[in-house]
Amino acid sequence: MVSFQRKLASGLMARNIEVCFDLDSKPYDAVLVIGGTRKIHRLWQVKRSGVPIIQRLDGMNWIHRVINTGWRHWLRAEYGNIILSFIRSYFADKVIYQSAFSRQWWERVKGETRSPNEVIYNGVDLNEFSPAGPGDRPQDFKRILMVEGSLLGGYEFGLENAVKLLTEIAHSQFLVGRIELMIVGKVSKSSQGKWDRWIRENGFSEKININWAGIVPYERIPYFDRSAHFLFSADINAACPNTVIEAMACGTPVLSFDTGALSELVGEGGGLTVSYGKDPWKLESPDIPALAKAASNILAEIKQYQETARLRAEENFDVELMVDRYMEILLG
Image 1 (spheres, rainbow, N blue to C red):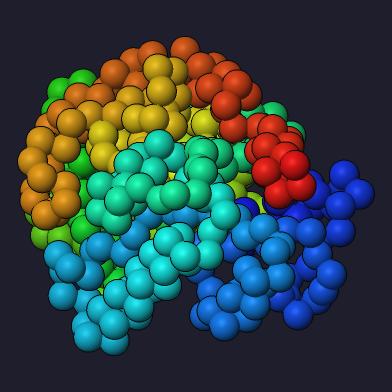
Image 2: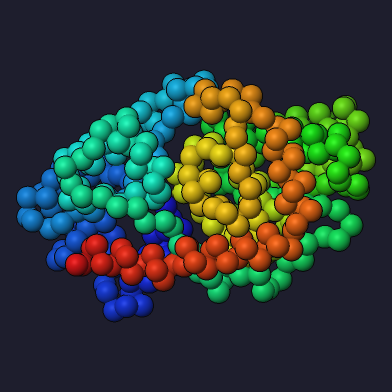
């Protein structure tokens, strides 16, 4: 949300539209609620004043219903869902979904709204996120990149799937040499130690390496995208992950399971998505061999996928187009 807010505010101000971030900073012509807010009473006053309220919606919290993440996390997740749904049903004059998947999900679970809605994909600065710039792909080994804000709070399964993918590739015959998994994002020390030990104890140290890059400044993400052969998007049932769009803009193809909005975003040329194999909503064990096969297909045609990934981003995820569409909805 922080990344989206920064890009939208910058784009609006570049178009001579003033932006504020507090409901008390009146007067204003429209209110954009990015997800939800706890200031329900203040939002109700805005509604009564006749100022249009537009809500931008991602997906819903659901991992906590499948994995035990603790009662505090469970309460926060459920409270968040209630706030999002309440604003959507009673306050929003229009709803913007981040993807068609997100809209279908909300309408399946909570029903359709009386207010109009549409889908606007997240956008990326195509000059900042570009194939041109620092960050070279290694020549003597293959690098798979994961960029996740956090792999905590129930999302550790994404890391497990990534390690299983590397193991499957190491067992296969299509790749000769070493392969590295570079992880950008927050990972607990216990998880790092667990998987480093697992690789050593199972005899994969000569073929597999995990590079724990940790949390990096947002401005460094293009460098990491350009330094990888492809991005593995580990999130399951994601509504519109920025990391996928940013990687494609840098000419880095994407590999993922076909859940959520991933196939919708990746399309025909941005990379490959494969069937999860079982029920992703229950986080059952996925089809790792199919994922490894898709990885081999990307690596075999890497130059073509790099070109079509960039083209996919240019045609669909330009931040300027995103800002124009929001401006049209907010101001008419």
